[in-house]
Length: 239
Image (cartoon, rainbow, N blue to C red):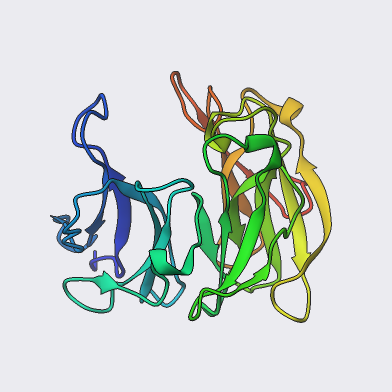
């Protein structure tokens, strides 16, 4: 078989207990060798990452300050260097997603104490300027932007404070991206929490934008038991 193209980026913890600083590593399916592609001279933990569709830019949250500063890395260089968005722009939160052409970056502004009021923010991926401060209502996070650029999927309905990924409540929602490229309308629930065990978590679109895969972990967005993976249409059918 021919080697698979592309690069996989994943979060590594140094030990099972998470006692040290996590980092994002890269892995080429062709040679299956993990690479520390970003030197990270300050040694801060970083993760909650997403990658632009063209593979040139990685967005990630760094563990210094509250909320976690979101920065981009230029992964077209080796080793990678800080990209256009740095801590100086003042963007902060956790999980993120690029739009189809890499022009916009959506991220959760969760600070670790505001799950029920956290919002999905859209920023210009070049300047860091915020163009939409609340795209899908409060209590939303874990965004995914469809490859065709037309829809946003996210988990919403978080309750309480704390981290969004620790919230035991939530449902899978979707919204339609408008002509300006950053306004989201017609937000609706497509998979309620009660449709299965746990709650929906970490949605991701299929390459043709016609399906969404999502997890059902056992505790918030984490699993302390056997979580499951599910597949649904963007209208919630075939779930």
